[in-house]
Structure formats: structure tokens, C-alpha cells
Amino acid sequence: MDRKQNIKKWLDRGINVCFYLCMTLVAYVVLQVFVLTSFSIPSDSMEPTLLPGDKILVEKCATGARLFDLPAALAREEVEIHRVPGWRKFRRGDVLVFNFPYQEERWDSIAFDVTKYFVKRCMAVPGDTLEICGGYYHVRGMEAPVGNLEAQAQVAALTEVDTARVVLNSYPWDPSLGWTIQHFGPLAVPRQGQTVRLDRTMCLLYRPLISHEQGRWLNWREEDGVATLGDSVVTAYTFRENYYFMAGDKALNSQDSRYWGLLPESFIVGRAFRVWWSEDERGKPRWKRIFKAIQ
Image 1 (spheres, helix red, strand yellow):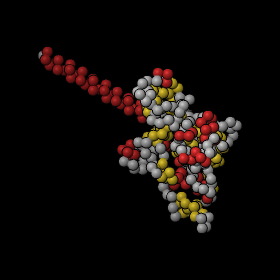
Image 2 (tube, rainbow, N blue to C red):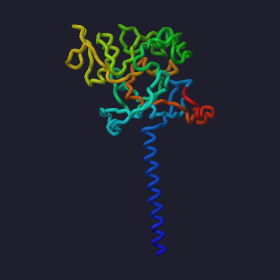
Image 3 (cartoon, rainbow, N blue to C red):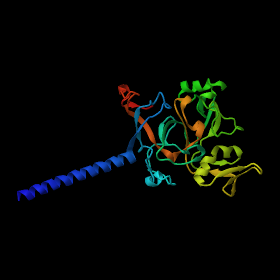
Image 4 (tube, rainbow, N blue to C red):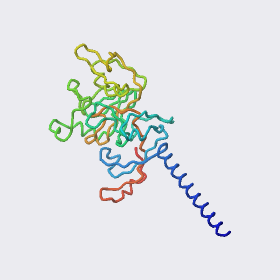
């Protein structure tokens, strides 16, 4: 009888342990998917805000976590991305983690890569019009430049001699516009439901976005001056999604919207809000950065 009781007692303990382990795993998955997650910073493109070796917390619930078919995304299949309702929108100045939105070596085509993450600062939100004047970011309706002014001053000081170390030409990579990282725009950042008339310039600026939303290539026919979407002639387009202009705080060393264009909202993971751990290149902790708020 004692032996049976002992066996039953150990079985009960084993069942309890398995139950709590399963509940812990479920809680961890729910936390990762819906509430917050962690990312490591590998580069210096967000200095001085973020340093290589920082580990950051990214909150998802305030702006709504994303839901999509992960196995299909890992297999590079087309997936629908849905966002759980949140209680705040992404704001100008937020530091955001997102999936890099363009195909490798092809910045004219938007593609979802669930394994490739970037972190940049949001410089313009849907409905904004952004312009870079002499290296400084300006949002229409705001008197002062936005972003890291010290880094932008370094861009402003660039000359043609510096093209060996910095790429001056920028999105949409068309010589007729002549846009550079010193003189860029004005570029209207589309919001969901906004309609634009499609002329040659609008096709240049929004071709990746419209082609992504429609699954058909937007083109401009020079011979008769019309826009075509697949086989159809189109004169205007209404956007289905919100878009954002993203930039690194270290403007001289950041692959951002100046080069590859606008970011779809569905590609945003969440807002980075705190450094929870940091270590230098020798592996030594940077104690002053631990639990430092990201601003």
C-alpha cells in the first residue's frame, strides 16, 4: 500500500511539474507574440540612441501585435498580416523595430522577410509630407527640423568628394528628380484611404507600394503618358495601408527610407522602449545603459 501511495505521489508531482512547465511555455509564447519581445542591436546606425551590443525591449500591445502564418512566412510564401487592436498609434519620433520591407538587391519590390529586422526612428507618419533640405529633415507644418540635428549637420557638410564613402543619390533613384540625401522630396507619406493622381512622378514614388498592395506591377508608359496596373490603365489610386518614413539617428551610416523608400505599417513589429542589457565589444557590461529608457 505504501509503495502504491509513493508511486501515486510521484505521478501527481510529475503531472504538476508538466502542467506548470506547459503553462510557463504558453505564458512565454503569449508574452512574445502579444506583449513584448527582445532584440539585439548589431550596428551603429542608431547611435547615440542605441549602441552595438544593446539588447532592447520592444512592446507590441499598445499599437497591436501582429498575427500571421509563421511557417508560411519562413517558407517565403505570401502571407496576410493582421494586427490586434491597440490603444495608441505609431508616432513621429518613435524608435521602431520592423521587418526590412524590400527584396535583397531589389529595392523596387516590397517583400516580407520574417527573419530580417531593422530598427530606425519614425520621422514621418501617414499623412505627413517630408522634405530633406540641406541634409535636415523637415515635416510640413512643423517649424523646426526633426531628428538628430548633429548627425544631419554632418550630412549637410558633405561634398562631391565624399561620395567615395557615402552614397548621396537616393530614392527613387531617378536622375530626372535629382533627389539626394541632402535634398530630398517633398514626399507625401500615404495614409490608408488617401487617393493620389497618377502621373510619371507619382508612379516613380509609389510604384513599390501600389504594386505590393495590388500584386500587379505599376508602370508608366512614356509613349502615351498613362499609368498601367497590369494590363489596365489607371489614372488614380487609393492606398489600402498606412506607410512611414524611417531613418537612422546616425545619418551618415544608415540604410533607411532615404534609400529604399517607405515602410508599410504591417511590417512594424513594435516600439522599442528600453535597453535591458548592454555590453561593449569586449563583452563587458555597460552598467549605465542597463534599463535605460529609449527616447
